[in-house]
Structures are given as C-alpha cells and as structure tokens.
Length: 518
Image (cartoon, rainbow, N blue to C red; front, side):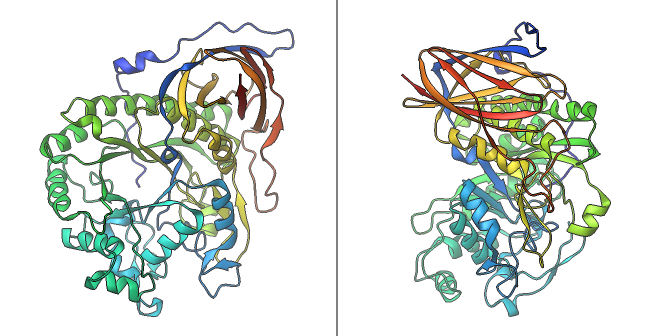
C-alpha cells in the first residue's frame, strides 16, 4: 500500500454516461427534502460477489501484532494466539476474502521466515513501515488458521520485488500440494496434514512503487516469468492477480497488457484511496464533502480501467480488483505514538464513505471481481480497533457496522436504481434482488439536509419490509475504547405500499431496507 495515489481528473467513458440523472427535489414544509428513486427490479446488472466486501491485513503498525494476533501465551483471551474478540466479531460479520501479508510489506517478505517452530523463526526489519523488527510469529499457518476461524477465503500476495519465481512457486506447492513432495511433507510436519487450497495469489504489489519502482514493461516481463511456474497443485488452480495501476493510470495498464498479450492474468488490481485534509476525529463538513466527492473519481477510474481491459482479446475474462480502498485521513501523531503506524479512528464520516463505496460496488457489480478495504484492524479505515497487545479491548467501528448493513446484498443480483445524485452530498443508493427479496441501501452524506426517500418499484410489488440505520448528527462521532457502542445500528421505520417503498434518511446516515416482494 502507498498513499501517493493519483488525484488527476479522468474523462468519463461512455459507460459513465449511464449514471442516473439528477431529479428535482421539492422541499417539504418541515424542510425535509424529497428524493424520488425508481428501482427497476427486472433490470439486472450482475451478481454481487461476496468478494466485493473483501478485506486486507498488512504487517503495518498494530494490524497484525497487537491487533489480530496477541500470541498463544498472552493474557488477552485468544484462540491459539488469535485475539478471541476479533475472531468473534469478524466471524459474525463474515469476511469473504482476506488479503495478506501486504501491501508494500509483501515484496520484502520471504514466506519461509514464517513457518516452523516459532522460536527458530528469524527476526527481520520491516523496511517499509517504521523499521520495526518482525518476529515472524504470525506466518502462513497462522494466517490460514485465522481465515478458517472466520471462514474467509485466503488471498496471498507474493514477493516479486525482492523474491524469485522459485520462491513463490514453492510457496504455492507448500500450501496446495496434498502429500508426497518434500514441501507438502514439510507443511505436514509443521502441523497441517491437509493442503490449504489457496486460490488467490497476487503476483507482486504496487510494482510501480514500493514493489520495485518498475516500468510497466519491466513488470510485465517479470509477471510472465513468474506465471510460468505458478501452476495447479493438487487440484487447486491459482487465480493470478497482476499488479495493476495506481488509480486511473491507463498507461500502466496498457503497458502491462501489451507485453503479456497471450499470457493475460486472471485478475488485475488497482488501488485508490480517498485522502483527507483533517485528522480522523476533527473533520470539518467542508473537508468531509471534499473527501467523499473522491468516490466519483473512483467510479470513473473503475469504468476507465474496465474499458481498457475489455479492449483486449480475451480481456473481458480479466477480473478487475480494487485491492485497496478507503479513507486515508491525516494521521494524528499522538495516535500513532500510542497505537502504532497509521492507526486511524473510524467515525460517522468514515461510515458514510464505506456506504458510498459499497453502493458503488453494487452498482458496478458487472465490472468488478473483488474489492478489499484497507485495513481490517487498527490501520486506516478499519473494522476493528484494539488498545494494544496487552489489552483485551476490541471495538467494532462505524465501518464495521456499515459492512454489516450491506451483508444482505451478498450473492444477490444487483438491479438498476434511477434518480440518485451523481456525487456527494446527494443521496446514494443501490439495490439487489434474489427470489422474492429486494435489498435497498441508502447513504445520506449531507451534513445539513434530511431526505425522505420514496422508491417506485418497476417490475415488482412490495408486501412488507424491515429496515436498519446507522446515524449520528456529529460527523466526528465514533466508537471509542471508553464508549464502544456510541454509534451502532438501530431498527428503522420503513413504509411499504404496493409499488412504493418510503423511509426517512436523516443527515449523515446509512440504511438498508429488506423488502418482501409479492
């Protein structure tokens, strides 16, 4: 991961022109603004893959050590070294896929450092994040165990920048070959008789930056070389993800794809962070609007990158993956000193950002394969925050609660929604359908306007519905160690009448309604 990402303006593609047009907004006597949407329940976009709600854990600050991992001998309640509360909360939420060990850290990580008896594992300096000493007590087996505990699909990022094709090839065999080879038997001797069956493999990370500072043609040559050796072992065929661009850098994408023609990757990653002017808990409304408006750029970049991929023979088969995304606020030095590098609180503003992102991914379900928010614990826009390796405090953030609100969309078919505004602070919405169940999600990112949302359903009638909402009038409100449940999901009123679904969206709120169709 790297913060220095593109903020350039991008020209919207033809696909961007399909964004819903603005609609007039009459003002009620009580100053609530009417928002009218049309939900085309019979106009399918694409399946909302659970992987669009993916996550990312890097050896950075206290994401792993002190966050997910406290060690087997810790006084903090743990499951074989994994923080017990983190396992419970993440398991309850459902983590479809978890990417590890980086980020920038991946291209200086050598997997053999993290296997075998813990006391014999070498200590290495983390050159990317603070020069800290890594004990390697959390390695491949520990990561796979965590994934199994929370029922997440593992996604391993391989070392291209300072590694070799043989090193990564051996990692694939170590993880996936059932038995009989020296590497498979070594895995068994280290406590795992059965193969890990890891499908997702990143071939390097940010190779244009911290992963080697390469030119696209240079990386393409390396990708082709590595890919020759990353084969099926034991029936598990690796899904190879190439290091794609920063933001909308189509020069990188084309330079890479031109050189790997005929050896296209299964997936192409892109990274895009939503930078912020203020520290997490001291945002102004104006700076919040600036940050949330970046999601319009993210949408343009996704459409642009998808158009680039589709322009190549067989390019439609390449999955577009937003490997890293989320708000990157100005990091408070006092928080970093106390809790570790890039420790960042998640506020009501962060929740709005999470909702805008997830709504966007739903609406572009036919163009995306996977999205991984950065990061899962403590670092940047995390789902959980912990107080340190010696503390049992583990708090679900506002971002966690937004992912919970969107859980009902997973594996449903996204359908068209017409009438929402193109960019914050206007209303954002998405919808999905499966059988007789319709799921509607809304975000009101405005700091000073309340919305009354009226959805007209086309193609179906509604019989009944329920709703939940996350809301606070303070954009800097957050769940702290002292007040872990200050901002939580609440039941919300929704009116259902035939082809109409209505609910109120107060300023700074995220809500989901689940409607039964007739």
